[in-house]
Every structure is written in C-alpha cells, then in structure tokens.
Image (cartoon, rainbow, N blue to C red; front, side, top):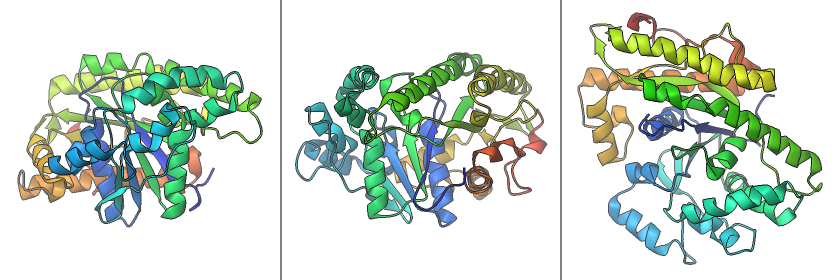
Length: 356
C-alpha cells in the first residue's frame, strides 16, 4: 500500500504503561514533520488532556472545557457528545492552529463518558447494528471530515496508558503504531499483552467488516507496527549507562516476542521480520528541554531550556524519527518496515555511538 494525498497517514504512539513519554514524542515528531513541510493534525484522545496542556495556555484550556457542550465548542468531546446522547452521528469541529503546519483537536476530560459507551458499541457492531458501527467510527469520521476541509499529511492520536475501548478504536483507525519505552523492567512488562490484544482487536474488526452492511463506516483495522523508541536513558560520554544497556537488550527481545512475532503470526504485513530491529531512534534524558517546552508550548529544540548543543541534538533526534516515518509511509508502503531500522546517516541520533 502506498499512501496518497486523499488518505493522511494515521499514527498512534501507544504503550499501556504510563510515564513513557508518549505525549512528548507525539508532539515533537509532529513539529519535526511540520518543519519538513508536512501538514499534521494532533488529536488529543486521552481524557487526561496532557497533549492539550502542553500546547495551550491554561486560560484557553479553561475556556475550551467550559464551552465544550455549547455551539461554539472545539474539543474532541464537542465532536463525539452527540454520539453519547444517542444520535450516533458526531459533529464537525474546527481544530486549533498551534504552529505552522500543526493543528490540534483539543482533549476533554468528558471523553471518559464516550469511552464508557464504546464497549457496548463494539458488541453491537458484531451484531451488524448500523448505529453502533457509526458510533465506533465517529472519531475516524471526524478526522476524515477535517482532512476534507483542509488536507492533511499526518494524523497523530495521543492515547492514555491502558488497553481499553477508546484505545482500541484509535489503534484500529491507525495505519501505523509506534511504541515508546523506557529502559526499565516495568516498561518491558507492559509489552506482554500488547501484541496479543492488538491481534484480538484486528481479528474482531475484520469479523465486523465481513458482516457489516455495505454502507457502514468502518475502521481501517490493520495497524502495522512501525517501531519503538527507547528514551529517558542517561548518557555518559558517548555511551548509554551500562544498566540501561542491559534493560534495552531486554526491551529488544520483548519487542520481538511480544509484539512483532505475535502480529506476524496474524499477518506478515503487520510487523517487521525477525532480522530487523525496528528501533526508530533513541531519545536520551532531556528533562530541561522537555519541561521548558511544556511551559512554552513549542518544540523542545525551540525551547529556552538546556544548552544550544542539547537543543541541536534534540532537533536531530526528532528529524531522524520523522524521516523514518516518511520512509515507511511514502516509500514502499507498509512493507517499508522490512528496511533498515537505523535511520539515514549522521543526522540521526547517536545510535551507533551509544553502544548497545
């Protein structure tokens, strides 16, 4: 499959463990793609609204949440609340421009109410009920409507740390997913059920597609594993700390056994072969940049934090990851996943130099 301008590439960064930097990665990959001239929509589909909080001032967020039920609402809850109120048809909202080429569909804590209904919608979709099918696909339909009004190259879904009904529809609406990981045992253990859950979701979605009415709105249903990004490790000189190297080796093993192997048993198109380490890049500990960027609502390399050298490293890091995503999405389609995982040269983050 080769993607066309009629179909923006939809990507979810997902790990059921919290605190692995999903929002930081999502935001800065989007900013890097925007600097490369791509049009990006960020969808804050986590009821905790961390993505929105990192990009908009508190006063604006308060106004958005206060008005989300009104005719001028602009949050994701504004879009899906008609579904909750039993119309089963969502509402178009205009995303907010946060940077050149980057738009945001703001999050809303009331998205929890939508998630509570998604479990029943999913069961009713397996019974061929058209209203439930529309409700399940309502966020997907919203994104398509936004794209028709203002063409997009990429859509990124920011997700909460769980394997639940909302994340199921977001993953199933994605062309690719990326797994952020921290180099610790807790992050490794969180991978154990991810591949099996995805395979089950894909199987159910294909069952729904096979029995659905011809005019039903359906999710894409085949999210391919694009790769993983280890982060928040310490660097001493030009090498990763020895303890973290050990953890990273375990991460690599579990990525293969718990995600790639499981998905490839379902379909070879859904994950790279065993010969490929699908690491998209490494994001070292850059806490001073991250904290400043969250305060200022900018890319971490544009923030006032850290040193010029650290900001330059951050920019190379995220541009390297963004180029890898470009290769997969616009090269040979999903089978580009079988290509080299290690980026495109010196501008990519310090992979070979970091050991491991």
